[in-house]
Picture 1 (tube, one colour):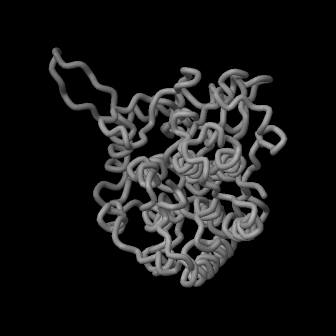
Picture 2 (cartoon, helix red, strand yellow; picture 1 turned 120 degrees about the vertical axis):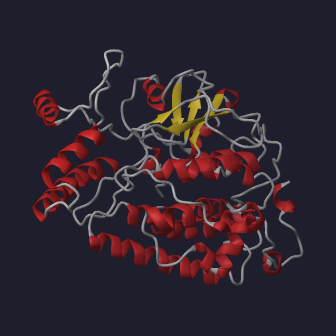
Length: 411
């Protein structure tokens, strides 16, 4: 089953805002410059000042005429469709069609890799990359698998930057520790044979061979779970035991298309019909999961599995991001009694909370996805995501068939 990287994890095209020479001259003629002394340096007008001057000359304080509004709306819709077609490819009905991952990791490749040369690239806003950070932490692979954390730039591409960090327990964007590159696209470009396609996270890199090992999130978390036990501090933890593999796959077949990818199908829908289908699939599935969790602590019983990890990274972003920005407005996770307690249960597992940087998550969506939020205004974080609420008692232990605490499974 395909678990591809999020569009947020892709290289977005940069959109030029350069004004042509003729247009610039026309704008210049419309401007009225203030009087200034000989000692003052003339400052070029900003695009906002130019537009303000033009609109004041045309219709003063009145509302713009209907023809102007309809023209701007038509132009914006055309530009939006162009941007969305590059950001989120769609099918003939306007439904979001997720591109496949380019680099896959098969079971036969696990044993051929030198695990001491592997390096993980992630981005904190990305739910698919977040999966790998959680499994890496739970398995105790932090020292064995170093990580470089990229941040989305203004054009949407992943870039590396120095971020002051006074709290070592909090993950923040930083420099490229493996290759010293400025962008993730540059890292992909130096892989064996070259590569100029989508530069997505998560990405597992072989520092010795200088090549991309894998950029498919589910392949990576399976590998981190079972392929590096010789290096893991918590080698007894198995998030995909043989006895539960069939159940895990059954849940993945439900959660991936309708929830993990379902929120993107809502947010990136380019027709009303595609959006309506995606919303129905999303919330009918959440209803089903919430009902199931009314009798089971985790998806597959008493044991935390990879299916839970995959669901959690979407749930933890749902109310602050997907509910608002992606129009998943029918209900909040907070309104689901079992899902909300389940999310808090997983959040409170040792090491999981440290992988959740909510400021980076909010900025990575609201300030970067320009076609969905042109003003780049970041809303206030929901109060339910304050520490005292996320760490509130959840009573999920009562659903366990055996009297064990979750630390038994992850320590």
